[in-house]
Image (cartoon, rainbow, N blue to C red):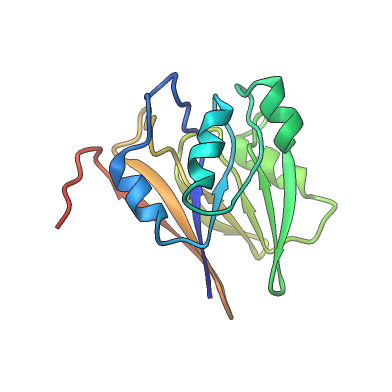
Length: 169
């Protein structure tokens, strides 16, 4: 089984200077980190890459350097699963609908998107839609969040919610 840490909308250093320690500690357990855009600075990519391999896409507030380096959309293949990743920004429609539209001509098992900072986990026509929320900018959400994608015989996703003040056991 492969374990993916899924984060989005980190907005470092604009919203927060760095990652919460809890998030960095959790990411030590994963095989790959997926970042779904709004990095704000390429140094975030380099910091995450020290923990695990990183796959990511650019978001709407990312620099041209990040857009050129990562692009706005990717398809990744893990075992027999096809996973689309896209930030989900644009005009008109909901973020979720824009994410679905980004892959409407492709066969996917899962679409991971960000942009709204709102955690989502649901199915639409047998496609798992997953938005991890944000570990650094919860906006109107009660808690900060990121996600974990488990890929083995099955593909599952779950949110990790935290208040921002997390103590170690």
